[in-house]
Amino acid sequence: MAKTALKKEKWTLTFDHDLKSRLQKEARKLRVYPVQLLETMVRQQLNPYGFQSIKDNIAYVNAMRLKSGRQSNKKFLADIKKWEKR
Image (cartoon, rainbow, N blue to C red; front, side, top):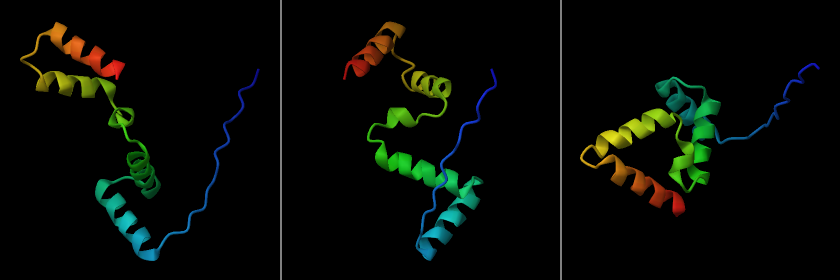
């Protein structure tokens, strides 16, 4: 059976000229497309819990482990389980 291509929705947004130029300058600084920067900004505003916006899970866990290097593995896992129950 042939795969069907996903259809993307195309949106048209109207921006204030100053806001649009500022967005384009910031996107150039970060070397990303303006739409990607806009999507990231919207996700940050609409996502009250920061854990859903983690892009690389493995790097995030490694960074958490480095910060909590003095904790034992059992204590670390207990903290994660406690956090999941919230």
